Image 1 (cartoon, rainbow, N blue to C red):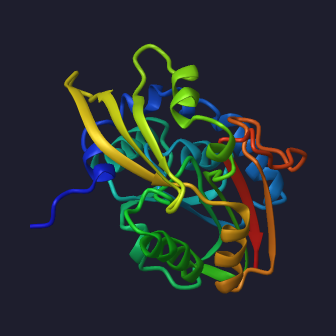
Image 2: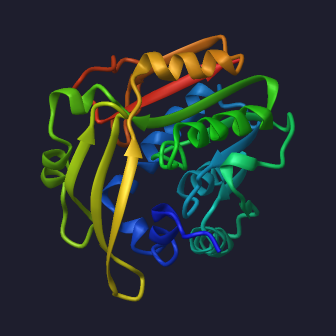
Length: 255
């Protein structure tokens, strides 16, 4: 049996606590931006990749959009389904691996926010498989909106100090960060409390990307228009030029 990867272990029993994390509090503003990007067209079918507990899917569904949410974690999908049911929303939440989605030319738009799978995979090839799989799921004319970690940030700043300055009581903590300049991966120890109150500690690593890499990857998948901005929590905007101060980048790309 294959050993579980850190992202599988992290999300085994961390759905209710996940909803309280500081980085999940920007949903309303982020959905405002998504609506504008989609020209408020409620006929579109939207795929939410790495949907977690369904916060974007649910908010968009409340606004009458047709959304399908996918995630690798049973616990996250269960929590998303429970939240949707409590609001009498009919949303397909499916447990699927983003590297191997079963869809072909089915969706008009895709979202992959708050590092929804990409760039958590253990190899660059696996991260690319996610981009390929999402692309295969989309129709010929489509829009793909996602966020990922900004590789320009660690060149000028300490990732560990960033996490320290953003730490909040009761939230997960990333420490002992080591950023590898050859691979652009940050290795850290993530400490958190699961939904049963157990203190957990995991060895994690995430891949940071620079804009030219993202552009090349998307061009190789046939995307023609690629715009990259700084990603501000709950306040995505095309006015935010990407800088070395941005921890995340926002990518909006079209076929």
